[in-house]
Amino acid sequence: MTSVLLLAAAAYVVGATPASYWIGRAVYGIDLRGQGSGNLGATNAFRVLGWRAGVPVILVDIVKGFAPAFWFPLLDGLAEPSWGVLYGAAAVVGHVFSFWVGFRGGKGVATGAGALAALSLPVLAVGVIAWGTIVLLTRYVSLASVAAGAAVAAAAWLDAGAGTPLRAFMFAVAVFVAWAHRGNLARLAAGEEPKLGEPDPPARGGGQGAADSVGEAGPAAGAGRVAAPDPGSGGLPDREGAPVAVAAAPGSGSGGLPDRKGAPVAVIGAGSWGTALAGLLAGSVAVRLWAREPEVVASVEASGVNALYLDGVPLDRRRLSVTNSLEEALAGAASVVWACPVQHSAAVLEQAAALMPEEALVVSCSKGIEVATKRRMDEVFAAYLPARQVRRLCVLSGPSFAREVAAGTPTAVVVASRDEAACLAAQALLQTDRFRVYTSPDLVGVELAGALKNVVALAAGVASGLGLGHNALAALMTRGIAETSRLGKALGAQRATFAGLAGMGDLVLTCTGELSRNRAVGVQLGKGRPIGEILRGERTVAEGVATVRAVHELAASAGVEMPLCTEVFRIVAEGADPNEALSRLMTRQPKPEDPDVVFEDAPGTGPSHEKP
Image 1 (cartoon, rainbow, N blue to C red):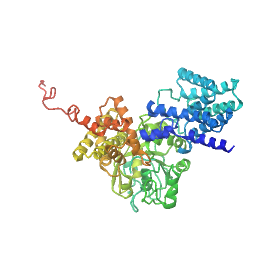
Image 2: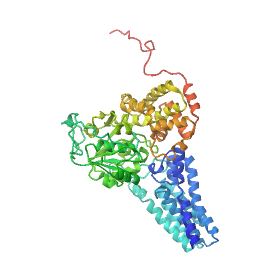
Image 3: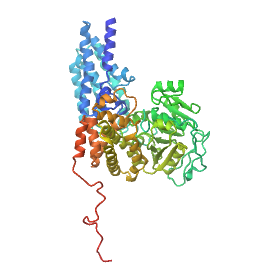
Image 4: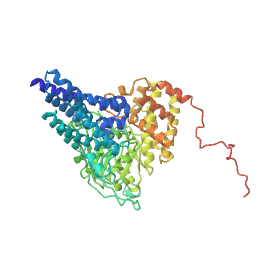
């Protein structure tokens, strides 16, 4: 019996091998838990990473189920099929509840199919036929998986050669597959489930209230707040002792923002930037900081320092608390400052949306584009929050390393919103005498500028890694802002935004600053290290690595030429040689710097000779 238990434990470990997670992180720099459907199954790997990653993942997942069910009984000389059922079941449990990734894996379809291949090929054939038929007829993969589970259970029951253990196993598999797909079935009933070939949206549709990337912690002790009596006129309210006061500006069209004096601010995400913002706000308001990692909570509670992400920076605990509970962080919050990495935001927001007060002002401080769906952060929020709250959404961007903000270094940023009253409220919430906040109505431009500069920063790092000098860096930054503003304009942004704090300001900082994570990754790429090796073991997020993939596709679909970003994509995604990328950039066909600026004697540009 001891050997059986040891083999069952070994089968669990084999099944727990998270192939999709390791391939996603090592090769693509992407954590699949924050992408697409958010699980670590083969289907999500195909959806997010494509067939080059999906095929190896599904093969590994099948082998994870087949090997324990087929080989493990032979290791102990137990030919009885029931032991194969036990080991196959242990492998499926390992896949679904993998200890490597916090007991959150895939749904077990491919691993279960591998185990079934070892136990009963006829029953597996029935399941495959059922799955393929439903997919062809409906294009709903989730419905096909549930139908396949039911079909294999029925086939095992009807198979005269199947013993009781196999029948019980197949019945348990059918029940579990249906349970694991309960969210998909609910979306299917509501008409919101995506079909095969469509992007996988978040589980909650728009209108239902159902880690960190902007900067690099709070202000230095004694950093003061600026007060003015009338926020509606552009001034800042007296906020000492009052956590948040959000008032409506006349004629804003937002329906008014509630006065929530005394209510706390929730900061979601305790990476370096989230910790910095929490410290900044805690200068005069009550703040609840949500951290995913228990180690962060333990560190802040024990020493007042986030040792994982912002070591050496003390936080003022008089107004700041830290928690692992989203419910605790969001309860009664007047404002929600969102500082989760973009690629993880949908997974966190799926849980947070139902807990978020509908009247809360939401300020997104995450820069990037969701690689699986090509959505900006405002579009991610729109899939979860009520339309009225989305209308008031604000986004914060601009040149702001978290560690310098924490030291009280003067910093200027910009906050944008479609709603003027919300924008002024966010400005009042964040402004201090060391942290100056400007406003902008160009939400799309501020979002895109903050995301696209990370790609240019990767290129700047590559140039530094190659030792190309200051001339090349200046040219790269200038042409980078030119092509990112072209894409921004094509996607509905104002080109002037790219010359401001969110555009040129942030680009200069991220391309030249020693604290820039994206630049640091680019330097290593320039020195010839592969992206998987660079990212392995990194806690902090370089958003540009994921964003460049989304930008490459957005530019192609918008018909915008972005040669610099294209070469960064080739280096990051395809392993292209940086020196060859440089050669391709420098030997392109010569062109005008700005096609919209023409010579005076160009045809059609001279003075008119028409009579008045």
